Length: 170
Image (cartoon, rainbow, N blue to C red; front, side):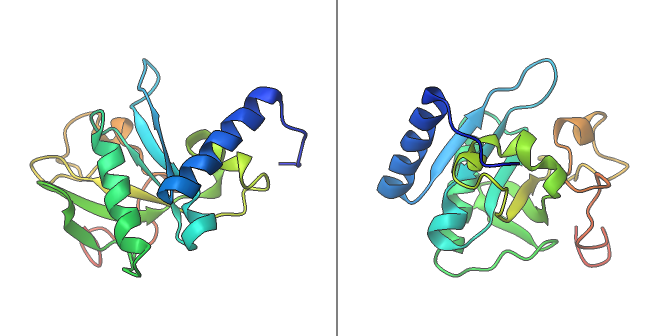
């Protein structure tokens, strides 16, 4: 994406995001769901501030996505590593979470505001994927119908690509 001049509205949003990063070490953007997709939440500024991947989570209830991303940022910014395919049971109470790298083809749709800080898309990003309360993952055959559409996996294939489900990952 070429570095085009920003509109007044885009400059205002960029300035707001930068102020949030300066004040809190991150900006968190929550996008409401609609008839075309689930709600999602993503970080802005942590790649620039801490050198850790920006994060997105999809399909969580209002506020839960922010809580999950905050927990990831707090721990990753202190040096904890989040390798894809590992499972955490302590990032969001009562929910299993794993991580997958986000394919760059999904960046603009799910990290649009990050492009105000990185117009060329030169940042890393991960998806924090959550299991159902019954510990089913979106790619599993016994997951609830439509769960894979409610929480799509943002890889090129739409399935985990950094690990093999059931072998070296959930």
